[in-house]
Image: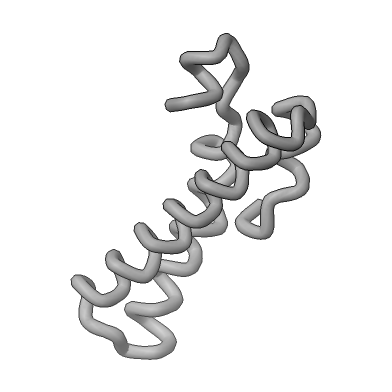
Length: 74
């Protein structure tokens, strides 16, 4: 939300959907974790990725496209 308010494009949602979805399904099927724990893990990792994206774009002044490619979730 902060990059969007600053007039930049936030690409982390689009870049993070597929890997986080794969993680959620893997936690459920391969590791047998309950769905609330799986979703909590996925939401936590998504929040961390968004925080890193905001730091890269707003504090380090890196272009939003480059910052989205540098995230560990993508």
